[in-house]
Structure formats: structure tokens, C-alpha cells
Length: 324
Image 1 (spheres, rainbow, N blue to C red):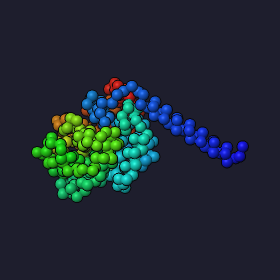
Image 2: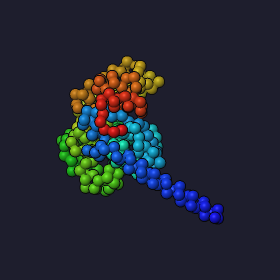
Image 3: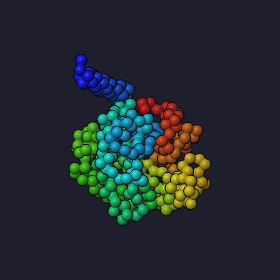
Image 4: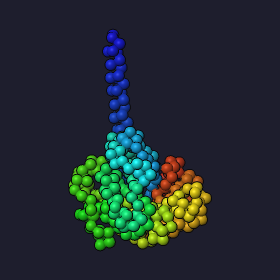
């Protein structure tokens, strides 16, 4: 048999088995028996009182395909300090869809984006609010606002993430400003009809049916002073005290987020946690294998730190039933 023909047949067989193995794997991935109740896996878990855990990511299609089966409940797509690249983010979301579903049967893991949009003042936020709309138009499930110092900027943040059809809280945050056309690609990512996306793309729990999560980084001393006012703004799902940046604002250079942290950083975390509890907002903090149970008992509902072992321990501790 000619060598070229042998090579062709070999390549055909290899490709055939790879494709079929991939299809078989996809079938196995979705056969956990769990039936998702929502688009957003994290909201589904938080509604049941279950903490959630995340992993930091950045990349394009291949990275998305690779992370479609991640151990994490959600992925923090970091464009705060990495280059702002919405085309790459769109490819990442395509990879997640085509590498899914998740072991829990959700179409993708939740993706929440950190942007270099700063909540320093209302005017400063408005000058870069277009990035919020661009990120959401790629099908992500939430945005984390950095340097959320000004409660007025927080109001504009919520407004930028909403469509005008949603009316909860508009007496405070104003009418939403997302526009027609921004819903078509994310509807595909979420696996819903385009009209359905318009109905679902709203911040939870302000909108009980919403599938978006908006977070605040109260990560310096000015943000801390305004924490109580910022966390009263309707439309915020979760918040953190940003221990590394908080420490930097007090002059500490190590960038510690795990114990022992400076006493000022510890106090800041306690203040933000208290304000979160008062306003029905979920608190985010780093967790480690040796402290995740204590952190959960304290009130941490979002386990940061990209620590798979800590997540496993935490899930078992809270007797999570949803597969991961």
C-alpha cells in the first residue's frame, strides 16, 4: 500500500476516534443527573445558601475550551491588569460553550470580568462605562467594579449593566442604558432565545429572575469610608475589601491576602462583611484549606484564592449536592 495512502488512513482514523471520544466525553459530562435551574450556576448555588469558589483566568478560545470543565464555580476573567481585548474574550466564551456543558449540566461556568473601569467618581466611571457594555455583549455573567470609592459611581455602574425594560430600583440608579443588538451573541452563549436574554440579563437579586452578578471592590481607605453607602445601592450582588490593594493603601508592600494580614486590612474586611450582611450582599474573601470552614462560619460566601483544595473542603463542609 502506498505510503501516502497509509498516512491518510492513519490520520483519518486518529481524527475519527478523537472526535468520537470528544462526543462521548461531552455526553458523559452532562450525565450527572443534575438538572440546572438557572443559567447562572453561582446564583443557583447562592440561592440555596451554598458558598461559591472561583479561579483567575485570561486567554482566548483554547483557554476557554480547556476551562469548560473547571473545578471552579466561576471564572474571573482579568482585564484589570491584562490587555483589554474583547475579541479575545468573545473567543474565550465560544471555547467555554464548545467545551461544555459543565459537570453540573450548566452550559458554561459563570464568567465575571474585572475591567480597568474605576469607580473613583461618577464622571470617571462614565468616561469608561462603555467597557461594561462591551464585556456583557460577549456573554459574560457579571462585572466586578474596581476601586469602588464613590456611591454615585456605583449607581452608574448598575445603570450601565441594565436594559431599560427593567424597572426595579430605577428611582435610585436610573433607567438602564444597554442597547438593542448587544443581546444577540450573549443569547447564543447562554443558550436562550434573544428575547429571553433581554428578560434575563439583569442584576440579581435586585431582579429575582436576573442572571447577572455585579460586584464591588472596596479596596482602599476612601472606598472603605463609603462602604455602607455604596452597598446600599440596589443591584449589587457581592463585595470584597480587596486585601492586597487595601494593604497597599496603608503602605504595606507585600500584597498579602491570606493570614496573617495587617490589622488594618483585617479590620477593613470585618467592616465590609458587616455592611454586606446588613444589605443582603454576599461577601468575598480568600480561603485556604485550613481556614475555609472558619471563613464560611464567619459569613464568607465567595471563596477567592483559586484554591481547588479549599473549594473541595468547603463544598463537603456545606454538604453541597450540585456536582462540581
